[in-house]
Image (cartoon, each protein chain N blue to C red):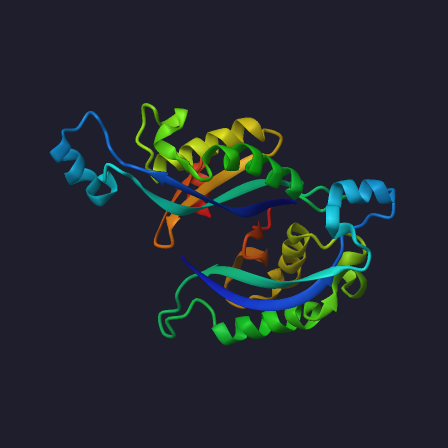
Length: 142
Length: 136
């Protein structure tokens, strides 16, 4: 029996959307108030969906305490209450929530590899969110 | 095809404990959920059905009928009950969020008139939920 388990985590971080490839005027035009030189922040919600057969004994797709511990240790300590622009992942990339979502997906996929990662969703505010999956057709079907 | 989703809530107690394991193993794997006195949650059940929109009624299914089915088949059996002790399917499997979603699928699958069951989503709390799509 294949089931999907989703867990939501919170992290607060600052960022500034700015690309050196653009002129100052272009940065302002593209990123608007998100280009403020001093940065700004969000309370992000990170939703991680994993899938797999439900273990007949434990009734679980994966041990939740292990997933929680991994996310707290690896995602939380790295991004929570940090400036995303200073993270190594965003040296060459703008820390948009699209890019943050992809980065978190890669971290979980590699670091928590014993469970199938279906999707990572990052909510930047309650009005916008981003989803990334390397199983895109499945995502659409769902 | 249109997907239609209906929510209901129920509140129930459960615990995670396997008699085949030692108390230490249960505690290691299930943590505080292994407390044999049980604990409880306010669950939210989301049932999504898939079907064609009836050209006359404009409905995929009669929402009231769907709600009544969910009430009869799930809420009346699970609400304000101890899932391990009082719900038959959880005598042989632990009432984890995943297994509750599968059990609800089995309860509802053949009872949706005029549409196909697409997804059962069970929230144990707002930050934890399981989905089941009927996959083997």
